[in-house]
Image (tube, rainbow, N blue to C red; front, side, top):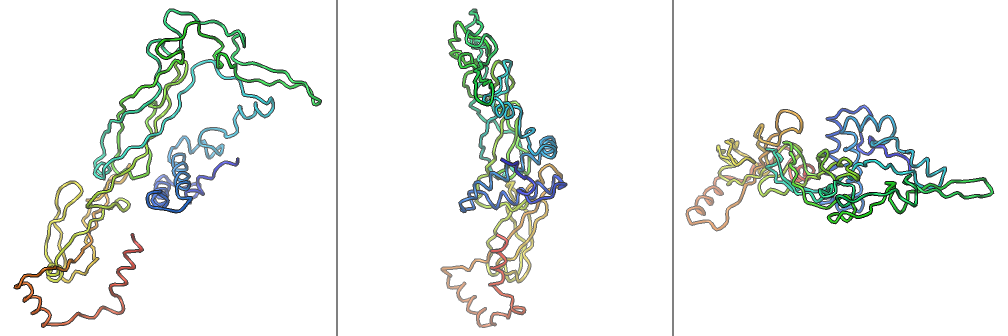
Length: 360
């Protein structure tokens, strides 16, 4: 299979900056997120752009990818070469091997993307057995050289054909490549050398993180075999919906309901912010439904950089129902005073609706 073109997946040039790659990923992740995109290939496209971002956002993996066409190495490894020529698996290393990487999902609130902070999560994973120390043998018992492979960890089968003599090499089925067998398996892990546990891991959520992005915690994956090092933990971030705010890039969008009188006359009002505070904004006289007021620096922090986005306040003019006698009398007087003014040119409500739909 040919290597994937991660640059083409994100739609960026090969010399694109980290900021350009991050921006392209955010745009595509929002476009293909399975929660908002119902197309049949949306989930696959979302996985592809996430995979591309994981490689290109890591300086070392990006360098390997640029050199070899793979974010994890040479792509066509020595195992593939050995299998091609000898028809079997390459001999497994008998020393410690690295544990598997783990992937989890964490739901956070919108305020967590603003403040950041530490989150404790429980990770079910394989840990080195405390009783046997990872060798799989009951304490005090001995290990013996595997009688099937003679301690080599591999078995060879010679085949003769019209093309010549071929040697098929595969991992020893009895010892699993370790070269030795256990006389008495550990009673706690049953000879596996690892046992499943739940481990509390502290995850640092950076301010500005967005829904669909992934965090890597080095060394918090599964324990390796024969006391090998742990793999890594990858945590996919999911952000819960907020009842008052919606995120748009690093801006936060809030809809403020105002009366026709406030829209016509203008007024200074208090607007809620994401951090349970209020900010004063001036509604301009003659404000139209759907018009916008901006509060600087009350959005989401820029990920990995200084500064914050803004809070965008859209005005929703609410027509009252169930008028009292006095209110009805006042509205009747207003109706007698004048008519609806003409719009400038041909720009009217439908134009504003189309703009709102295009920016949604």
